Length: 517
Image (tube, rainbow, N blue to C red; front, side, top):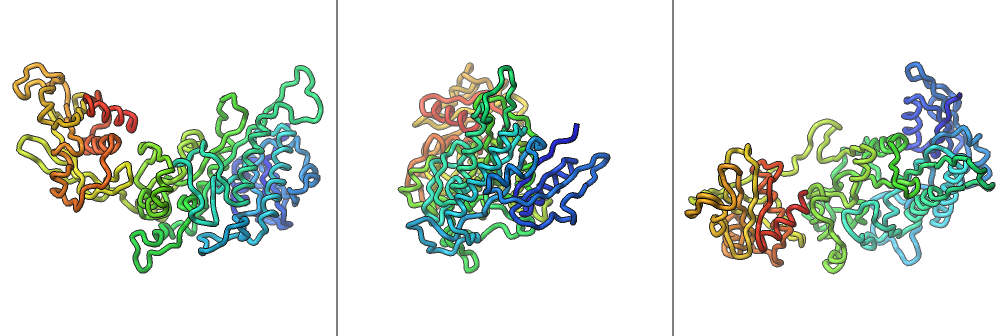
């Protein structure tokens, strides 16, 4: 039986050419189509490309995918195994929606196409291609979408996300027609995946329907491989500003980025991964973005600088364990990593594609010892749950039964008005107790003081390690949990046997377990 082909639309674009070449190198037969009449690189549109002992055939067919008749006549659809739908009018349009003016210079080039032409053309081509694939019972369709469907806006301050980082559950908040056209394309995938009968005729009794699997890849603004060394971008205007460090306001979705090759890899992976049996139709959506932003500044600094306080208060910030680093992207790529095995590049960890470029935490831990055996750990780049950066914050802790980590480790957190000395009665052999709650001969026991108890960073001692002012807003249970976690990191603790506390100490223990499961 002849090998069925993979249809690639938009095959003369930069991504399209790369996808065609990668598929051909894998020995797949490819039908490549585009609006334009040029030929693919290599001369004859119908040429064979050998790979080992296999042969792949790349055929080029010109077609206007907005025309349903041209799409149906494109080829015998029964020959198509998979579809990669890349074709689209690029965007956003230089013609913004009514009521929106371009009062700043856009950070990316806008397309000279009417917004209505862009919207209707992209929707028509997506419907024609995707529905034809479903009607022909293709195995899988990969729809090349865009994170701009989440809410790219010509006005840099118009888009306000519901929560951060955004994942696939975040609603569409389209502010312009390009993003809207991509959102509708994803909805078409969902519609067709839910249809049990995409034929005009009734299904014969006993006929097994092959369900076409749909994959939507919503990727952020692409950085071409030859431009990757241009990152980072200058910080936004007014943030750590220098003479050459100025950038006009930028809509938050543009803070995210993707390396060109990572996007290509994702399209190939989307054709090959095992589809989950979730019972909710056959459509999987993935958000694609690097782990970090294109700026040097920490993400919370960017958010505080960009949004007014009353606006930022409306945005729900997910737990810090989901932020991955102080430079976390506003787009959560966890699903793409776990399901597709996707491994995006970061400008922070690459230079010329191979060598480390920036170390994220270059400040060495500073520890101050006290006569009772306790120590103060200076916290690196500590930022409170309210977004306030605290210089000179520290945690006082004491270790009992320290053997370098061979014994199981217990973390004890102090209650509201207690210090590590006040709860030493829990430790067998301390303060005259013979039988305490915890035996240091069996366990490595770390007692960590919470903020404000007079031992750790407090209103009475905040200047001791370089802090100029005490935070305006109070520390939270989350703040304390993150501080205790830094103590554990400093001591090399990978796994806790027990996190313990009573009253306010118990509240910290619950938060620690939730943030660092």
